[in-house]
Image (tube, rainbow, N blue to C red; front, top):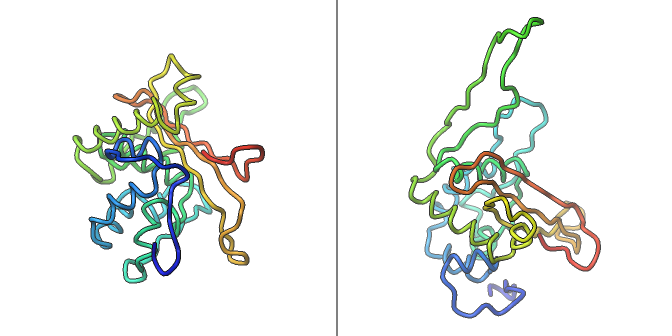
Length: 220
């Protein structure tokens, strides 16, 4: 709690390790863990994963999202940014950030063209994936994949595991409150899931986002 504004979870989770925090999407647990890091370190980590920056995809009109300068972070932003409030990201940024975990810690720029062929089907030019830079160690990336696997196995993303038994899926659910310049934060939501398969050697990433879901549930 800070200046009368309180961040809490929807359920009481009891004592948890960090994998269980992620499985349960526990706001309190994420804040407790991230509170140990200085603001500048948190900011640098988010920027390294592509938050608040364009991905340089070769298409026009890409949004940058929003990540406040470290000098503008107050105690409340220090609490909320790690759980996704007070920051905005694009679906592409989320997918690329998750891909960095899947690629053993390497951030890869997005590609839209595999190859160019002539009228006879001969390859004129072929484009190869590139590593932009290393975000984290191989060991940390693999630990993160184990955590994301637990989210799908028995956490908030368990629906994917129940319905996709032949696939080994890693991923994370998301529930966002919509914000507009006119109204600020509203009572409208966006539900999302981003994940990849297979966990150990990923081949495909899928990012799903539902804008203003209707019905009994609005969570990712």
